Length: 282
Image 1: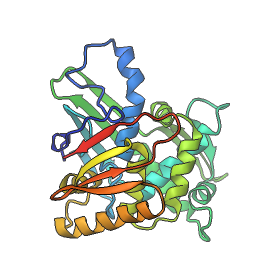
Image 2 (image 1 turned 45 degrees about the horizontal axis):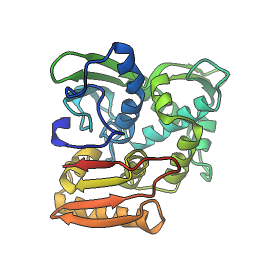
Image 3 (image 1 turned 30 degrees about the vertical axis):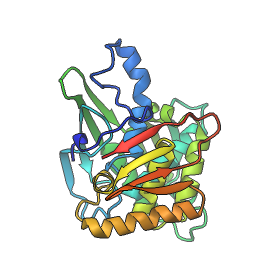
Image 4 (image 1 turned 30 degrees about the horizontal axis):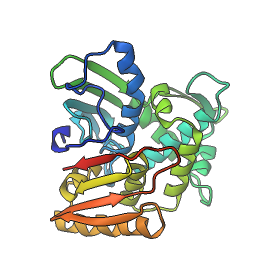
């Protein structure tokens, strides 16, 4: 899906390649890149809410994102919410290990699984390692609509798995780590997702955590953004509204209002020091 299906006015999710922005040196663009990459991780169909099915290799498949005037293509095996948990776990360990190289962390897949699901009883180290390799192979090609900028990004820059010791060395993208702005944010997100089994609930947890305080959502656009385009719109509408009401009941969001046919206004409590902002998803 192309990003053109979505319109927005949120500062948090604004694209660094917006043609309306004044031309800036490349170093300024790089400074903004971290927040936008994090938005791609948490607010697109890169880690879709659907079951991935067979892990077929995808080559330059267009993603549904919130970046304006930008085309983003994904190459690699299809990723899902389990892979996002793996990425978040590695990011948390990297942020907790500032003494090592920037973004570098050593881990055992079994310990990583325990970090992600602390109350789980069974931990599949091989399954966790396969997820690490999928994340390492993932490639993002980013270009603005005018062809002025072309970027390539990866989630992991390197992965080494020592099967003799059972230890893996991972280099997490430093730019995405910058977007998290500390380990506390990742800890909260992992904790909020740990008890959620449904893919849409887990996707929404990341989307709500990253998005601004006010969200004006079109149900059809939300369906495309989370990757559930094969689900009939009526069924998705019922599922999405039910999930949002559960988040309302547990205090993750503060209010849900109707914004018209197939449109919702969702408000979440502002974090300390956070400025109010609005995202229009249509």
